[in-house]
Length: 171
Image 1 (spheres, one colour):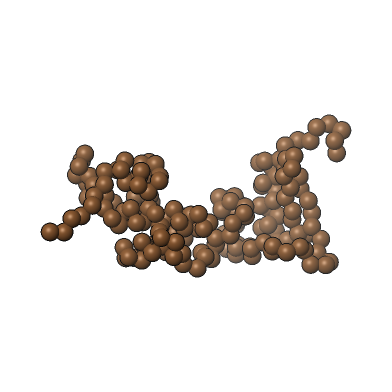
Image 2 (spheres, one colour):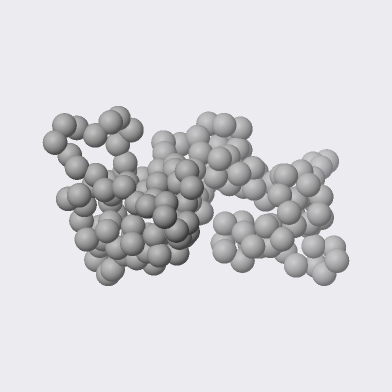
């Protein structure tokens, strides 16, 4: 006799370390398959738990949800469990930690704009000029002087939304 472990929503969420609301959101978005609805007896299985753990592992590796969904689409339970256990696939093409949030980029980018290359970790090569925009005390935004128009629009949008006015006489 084969025993199949099933979980109620709260139990599944607890095992995966997420809120029940997150589980429902992932089902709605298509990141998790919908469980067979049985009213108060609706149950989730091994695949749901494995997918939740894999989603969490990929998020910790800075993958956006769209890339996670694409990566896990069609993946079998064994593959999903390997990802959940830490066998992460190569980084998502769009996943670059510590960049401008995707929502800001998407809001500022015009139709047909290509994504900007990831920022360089090393210091600027000689001859490059950068403009410094102070957003708040201790927070600066740096824009290369020859940056494309799309990048300038993003910087202006960030400045207009988040910059705090300097106290009188401080500039």
